[in-house]
Length: 62
Ligand SMILES: [Zn+2]
Image 1 (tube, rainbow, N blue to C red):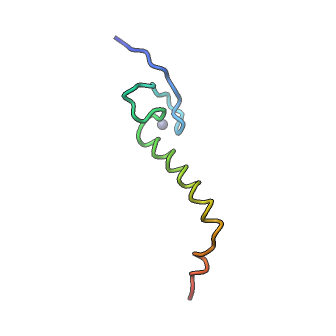
Image 2: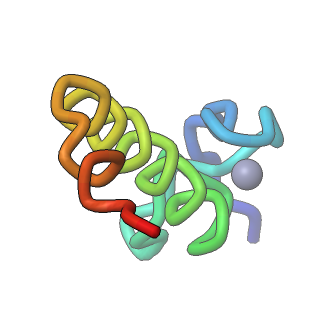
């Protein structure tokens, strides 16, 4: 017996994923793609404040 689930495309790799209630990583195909997506967001958020302050450059001394 085959149940029908809605299929979505994984935002990270584009692979087709069945939207199952037991799929904790939906709409991602798996934990890895979810982490990659979260990591991409974290990196972007990190860059914005880092470019505003040049404190780390001033600290560098001979
Ligand atoms: Zn994926």
